[in-house]
Image (cartoon, rainbow, N blue to C red):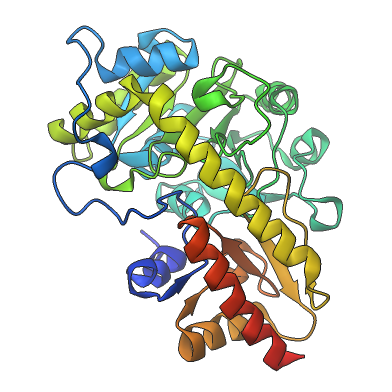
Amino acid sequence: MFPTIEYLEWIAGKPEAATHDLGSSDLRGTFQHQRGPIPGRLAGLDDPPPERDLDRQLADCYGVDESNVLVTAGATMANFVAIATAIQQAGDTGDASGPQVLVEKPGYEPLRASARALGGRVDRFLRPPEDGYPLVPGRVEAALMDDAGLVVTTNRHNPSGEFTAVETVAETARAADDYGARVLVDEVYAPYVTDLTTDGPFGAPTAAGVENTVVTGSLTKFMGLGGLRVGWLLADADFVEAARSVAWHLPALAEPSVALAARALEHREELVPAQRDLLAANHELLAGFVAERDDLAGEIPPGSSFGFVEHASVGGDDLAARAWEEYDLLVVPGRFFDRPEAVRLSLGRSAGHCEEALAVFGDLLDTLS
């Protein structure tokens, strides 16, 4: 019933083992995943008062009510619970393969794998590479069927890094509602913005509160606190209550992680600027590197520290394999994201580490010219 998630099995352990890491998309900087009980950035910081628990903090952060918040063991659990809840609410469609779950393409493999595992019939809608991977509400509407239960998208788009305006997400949600479906928006990369034009969570726009959407997020990517394994789901109160019932079937989030996540959110005004600086530095490194290489096709979206690139003559699998085997360099094959001709480059380590890793990648590319 549960299909193998090839990307997660492939990537496991590689960021820690690589000498040169261009595969880690979380902004961990000089910090590795948590090795002690308290991440170094949180040591010595005060805990919030008892009345400001994690649910209350997230509600304040996103401008919603606490009844709209469900804290989960990471965004992976949040997405899983959201998909399971939507499929359950879609009910018996009369199709043995279950209700339609419409997932973007290119896309993040676990989102479609989980939908299949939970009994959904996965169909795809295209985010066209030739146009810069936009979310086009008309493409979603054209692909929706009468038995649709859920539309799944990411913002920033994982894996291209393209950002979608909240107004476009809202238009997509309205189109889905005509078919009785919700829209799940995975926003783990939404805070990856360098041009701050909003007072939203972590300084970034969000679809939280947009009618007919379910939003997921975590502290793993932008905050670089993957060791805590803390995520969340935001939706209308009825959906959250149904999702809470589904979540009882899964392991509970550990109390120390909840406490440390609350500490991180309590001090986010102090912690976010360093993350924003790292994002800006790594974006400039990656965008500059890609722009200077005549043998690479691809553009890095403004403010993004990750994106797709395609070599003129070598496919994604071969390029990633040579990088790993000959240079101890981690880049991710695009086949895990529906783009086998490409690789995904992600700069999450310190700017110094990423600059050296890009130089090594450049040496590899020079041997292919």
